[in-house]
Image (cartoon, rainbow, N blue to C red):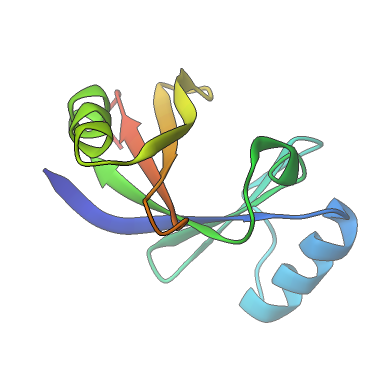
Length: 117
């Protein structure tokens, strides 16, 4: 079961430039600002900047579906023909993520918060 698309992660090559661009676009400062991830909140959406995204195989923005059981959802996607891009792992604060590539090459992200939001 999903709770919808609530997060989009952009792979970026120049984190400082991307942070300035999204700060101007969203007219807010980031809520998370580290060398490995910058995150913004706007209108109920999380917008993330990942300077390591290209190295992980991200070819463009990746929408993340918020799910209640990431491992079950990942298994169902793999059974349906998706290929693992990034296996389930904890990115901190009880947040689990994974991503797959569908048969058409589209990227699908999965996100599960294991602690109450």
